[in-house]
Length: 120
Image (tube, rainbow, N blue to C red):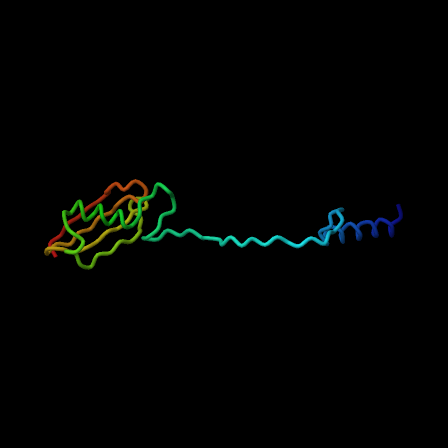
């Protein structure tokens, strides 16, 4: 094959690859567009990544039950996500009856990993 012929073959092959033909005939079909929304999951205190994970609400209930305190008797109640010794946890903190309560609750199992009660 001559040098010019080889160049022409490479040029045409490259054009076919770049044009997306790939040896197939182009058709006049309408592209399909999905109308299903995409949802991105993020770890938040009100959500969970896995069907077996407990919710922030459940972690709060567990801490209040363990403390023997009604939610209506608390103030400065907060539930946040964090890490304790490499484990994802809910950090549940609140004050009630002159005491400050702190609980670390495993994000997946609901196990109370650590608890602390201090005089406020």
